[in-house]
Image (cartoon, rainbow, N blue to C red; front, top):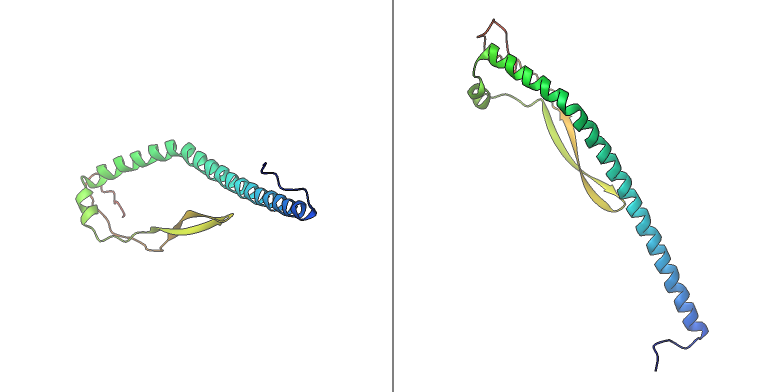
Length: 129
């Protein structure tokens, strides 16, 4: 015998419902995939923009480190042992994209003002923490 059910109205109704459920499931999964692809493209654009700015930021930070070393000498121990307050913190959250939970990190300004100086060695310049 074959596995094909007999062609009755009841079986036809069952197959219509199965087809409708399958097509609606496919449509929902397609929406979910499209939303995740769009979010991924947004992340990729943000990463590309950040990478583009990294070379200039790296040059600036290295020059700032050189200036600070000239002005304060070797200040690594002072930074490690100092009781400085962070000005920026990282906040973590969750973004729900089409039922998928994605981590989101935000920058939080603490409003702390640090007026500690690290030293006056080279040229009388002050390094503020």
